Length: 351
View (tube, rainbow, N blue to C red):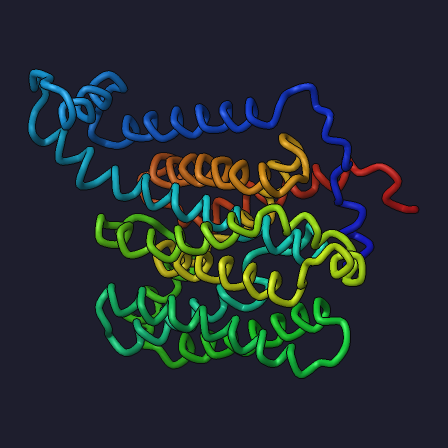
């Protein structure tokens, strides 16, 4: 796995001819265009001009020449879902960027320490206990934090190679929590609870409400703020432990801060959208190709690209067929071929 990870490392030459700030501006424009265009997709036909006027009417004296039902669809149905996709996509992408930098391996994803497995177990347990939607979200978020905390605490008992210890304990904890989810699915009512658990685990934003967005935005913004504060030090994590210490960076504290920030974002994302894979694995690769490996610009680039990407995937999920396709299924279908292309482009992979 380590050799494959090194083979996938992007070239470190950042001279791409376009300034990083220009790339960030272009990514922001891309995100804004995708964000607005998504309001036009759905069974209720709305033009982009009407969307702009509806939003402008909340700030400017614009004459209302659209039915009230159209405004209800924009603000009550599509806006929460699009905001949810933006938050989840940005959070998973930034968490994946942080983990890939911290572990020095581009094969790492946000669920490496068991956050997704813990959140999945929490949701399955809440559904089995017939808790409300809010109960599912809370228990999912809490057990996601518990899983990562357990993995980190166990890794501290390993005296050598802290990075490898984190990965191994994360895999073990993730396997343990995934087994718990499988057990709950086996014991669940096959006509009521089992379909609900299965659908939730496949990922969806179909029932996302304004309340869900408001609840998720707090831990996601907090986690992103932690990563952004330490953004310049994250570049040092690509060096060895001794080199980082010689530069005055305490890798232990920095690693803990990155884990806390990434876990907050991942657990909050899973509690709202279910298990949505591949976003935190693929988007950091694309961002590095576009803007380079400098974490100061890579982090916001990953967030913008992840938000735009998941909005597009969610648009496909609700527009490709008469029934909604789970997000996790679509991200896997899109992610696997891209990863194969990424592998095939590597030169000297056999060396």
